[in-house]
Length: 384
Image (cartoon, rainbow, N blue to C red; front, side, top):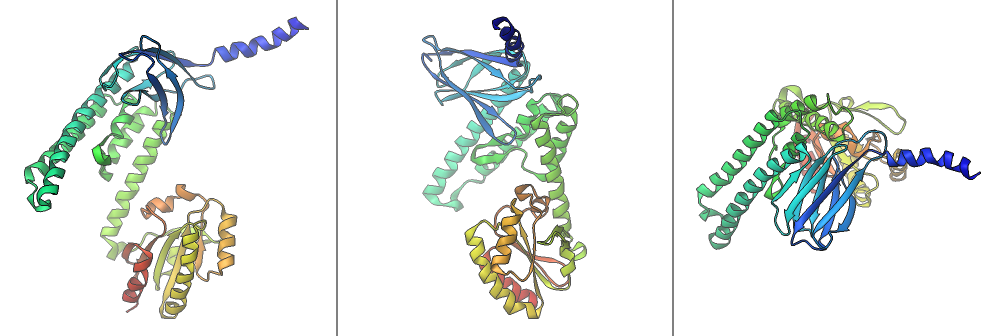
């Protein structure tokens, strides 16, 4: 029986031991017993891999494992007592060695070409960030002393120069290293105050260029998929802005979503009315309460030509349908059940809930991102 049991369990143990992995180790100068934190940087979220202590010599070692038969390249940050950080791009079977000094963001990395490339990219960003912070400190001090009117224009120009220089360096990096996943990090760089380096919709071309190149070698990578989502979103934004700029000719962008009866109702079916296009979430009690105010507005102005097309971004359509029935909402209510993933949210660039747009009888968007307090005034103006 023992022999048979061994024969059964041995393949299981062998499979566990053969899981794909990579090793990260390092030594920290003056880092005896330093706290080492390893975080996996996903495309949309972070996952704590582990927290460990360096030994008496400041050295540590950690094996990164992944389920399945393949090891997907992954971004990992290694922080030392929360005062210094190394950014790594880890691939299967790599033995990455970090050498750092406690309290210093400078470090060296060996055993990973991609991590070395990432280090050079981050070093340039750190230099730009230090310069940006220094200039902002001067600007803030001058604002506190004499107000906005007294800020020298040259400081604003210098801030702009820092941004432009960092942007150009990042573009050059992407073009030169188009087959490296380090491009993902370059495209997601930010300067202090959360200023994205690639902030324009027109930068969609760089996201697409990186995606098209990287998907050849990394077709299943979450990072590559995120690049696709980003460039598609930015191209839609450019299309939306183009249509908004020619609204007198193109009018609003039509959408077609299911109502409570699962019947697709197009927004264009209300054309000829003043349309309140209202975005909300039915699970928000405050927004449910505001529906009572909307009912009062609807009863008051519907006879004059007001129509409401209310779009919910819920994922539980049963709860949404119950909320509509409970409140006896008389206008068109639609929901695709996709929540934040709904393409309509991006089509109209909805960034907060509730949010409202007003469309006049000719089909032109005449007000966007209205707050609840602004809606009635806009309706009265449109109905005149």
